[in-house]
Each structure stands twice: as structure tokens, then as C-alpha cells.
Image (cartoon, rainbow, N blue to C red; front, side):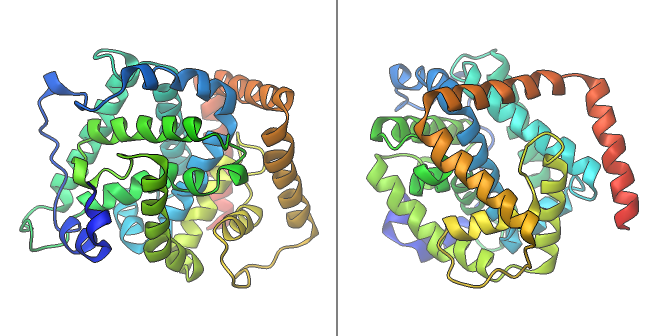
Length: 330
């Protein structure tokens, strides 16, 4: 049972003072509760809904940045200091996640398995550096057990709570497949079972996601500060180089509406912003959600985008554009 099921206050008070245990035996890299038959279906499901999964993950990660504790950790790494570093940071994040869906994370030595180990090692290095001198169970830890649970929420929370709003399947078995997939990834990244958000059936995980949203995510988004908003804006500028519709104001409105935040937008949207927002919503929540052929075409378009982005020349071209934009913004 998750510690969240016992008490959210206990989850935060204890989990925020516990670092992740990165020293799991590599020979037992898979959890004993893994359902291999179920998880092998993830590649087929990803092929059907790759764009909506991507949008759900991006929206959730942006919500995460409004959390001042997560923002502080991300900002301290130095990989979010300008548009170019943000482009590479989120390009590789998206690429790694895509690789996890498309390959065999459960097979040791597979490329997706190796990238999970890479992410795990990066987390361990940041944790060791930022927690140096701190006392476990007494001091607030960076990349704590609670932080990793909330990070899991960033990847699956919005999809679990509002599948139709991200254009994803509303079938119970499809959502539970994504949940189980991220439970396994969480385990492989060092999350203990009592802090693993994704262990359990849809109803249980949905309840946990709702608790986290009400206690953490919604209050931070509703009252976001200028620093976190600036980082979100820069992330969307960098993503907009290869993601259609990744504009700051329309995306913020999308997040506010999806999370049912009853507060006037803290930004002013012009007609073009509203047009982009309405087109994005119509494509994602109507055309993509309802029509198989539209899903296929949009998914194929983004497969082409990923193919083009493999080119170092294309990446350098985007980086040069962003570098000039950075200079004009400063």
C-alpha cells in the first residue's frame, strides 16, 4: 500500500526527508510484481496514441515546474539556464521516454533499459551533490522519495484524471497499462513500492493522483510565480521548434482549463493566442480523440519529426536559432 493511502501529511513529512535508494541489485532490476504479458502491449498502445501520450507528459512536466521545490532542483542543475540547454534537456527527455515506449525496458541490455540506467545515474549524481552534509530523516532532501512520486504524477497524472482532455483512450485496460508501465519505470529508477504512485488499479491510482493535484499541483499552478512561469515559457519556446502549438499562452490556458482552475488567467491572450488554443483543443480533444485516421496521420507526422531530429545538423540549426532568440530576449 502507498504511504499516500495512509496519510498525505505523512507522505510529505517522511518522504521529503528520504533520498532515493539508487543501489538496487542490478541482477534484480525488475519488480517481482511486473506483469510481462501486460507490459508487452505498451508498444502497440503507444503506436495508437503516441501524440496524446506526449502531450500528457509535456503538460504534466510543465505543471511540475510550478512547484517551487521541483523548480529549485531543476534550476540548480544548470541545464535550464537558456533556450539552448532547455531544448536539449527536453529533447532528450522526450527521446528517452519515446524509446521506453517503443523498446523493451524489461530486457537488460536493451537500449531503453540503458537509458533508464543513464537517467537513474544522473539523478544519483544530482542527489549526492545537493544532499551533501544533510541528515536523512531530519533534513529536506533534493530528489527525495516524495519528489519522485510527484514526478511520476507529472508523467501520468493528467492522463489518469482526464484521458479525454489529452486525447487518450478512456478504456480502463488502456489506462491501467500505462499506469503499470510507469510503475515498472518507477521501480527501475529506485522508487520504493510504498512511494510508487502507480502500483494498484485505476481507481486507486486515480484517487492518489487527485490527492496530489489538490494538495500540490493545483495550488502551485493557481498561484505561480514569475521565475517558474519564465522557465515554462522558455521550455515551450524550445519545444515549439518541433511541436506544433507549443505556445506559452495557449498552453497555459490549456493547463488551467484541464485542471479546472477557477481563476482568471494571469496572462492576456490576443486573438491569435485564442485561435491557436481553439485549434489545438479541436485537434486533440475532437479529431484525434474520435477518429482513427486522424490519430494515424498525426502520429505519423511526429514520427517523421523524430526522424528529422536525429540529424545533428538539424539539432544545430535549431540550437543556433534559439541562441539568437536568447540574445534578443536578454
